[in-house]
Image (tube, rainbow, N blue to C red; front, top):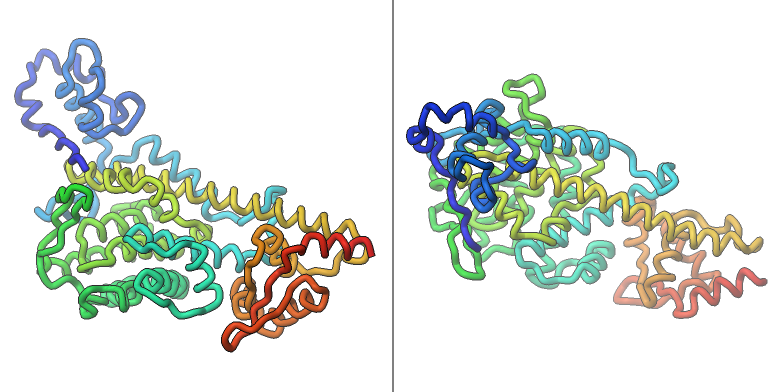
Length: 448
């Protein structure tokens, strides 16, 4: 990956400026040149306004940003504070997230889904566990991983173990949302995420013990980032936990969503672990969002979005480090990612609602079947109609819908009795499969 060109020094550029031209430059003093929050590496490729060059244009932009920068109690390796700018696009994204991420999961008809929250939560946890692991190299397909997690099967290899660990950690974080974050809890989270997946098993749950860690682009071996010395990590982690636990009244005020994103950023910047830093960073983001009431994010997967454009994710880090500690670049990238994840969730819910209504209409058209199936059975039949040959286990059905074992057993045995599922044994457990002619059987039942 090509490293971005560092921004010119404000002081050095200002020292070469003719004082008589200050007024001319101030006419272009906006934090959003060309309507965007551009990094120098982007701005220098654009045609500057008439009468000034690119460096002078950047000086005017930098001057405008200086007035709105807010310092953070988070430091770079030289002890200088990170900053961010409260620009319009950032505030607009926060407004939409405040509206959308603390609301209710609703159907396309704007009515809350009936009894399906547990199923959507499980699907989201699986999606985040799989894609977060895939971002760091796991090759297991989503279908195989989902079957493992829904059935409770133990992981069979390294990649499945990564996904299993991610799922277990994301589930555990739900229980910690009301608790303060401490260095000990961060280490325990890392241990849970990386157990049985590291080259050196002793690295699970402990800070790195040397300075050999580098962030490298594996395609061309370019060093992208050199993290702080390992001896500073205990102090830096304590500082980060203090920042994570600060309430809204603690100065400086940082919007809760920005605070969650900055936790993500700092774990990536400090790289406190020998491996598993990305997974830990994203898990802490989810903890912070849940802690501040953005519960809808539990049902959304940011890793699913990040995996589609990993270069943009890396570039957001590089722009901050080469942009004089301006985290606005990373904040804007992650805010956009969050909004995409929320949009994807609502589209998913709308699609599932339409599919379930189609199944309901199919079943409701028969007086013999009308009202015969509960929403869990409808969801299973809907899935089976679109996934020929899929197997359904009692424990997976129980886990998907958050019901008692006996309830899950009754659901599946009833469908078997009606000829809509066929039972076979797999090891010590029964597995129910939908027959290949399920739709035909339903239509035959409707005619009887």
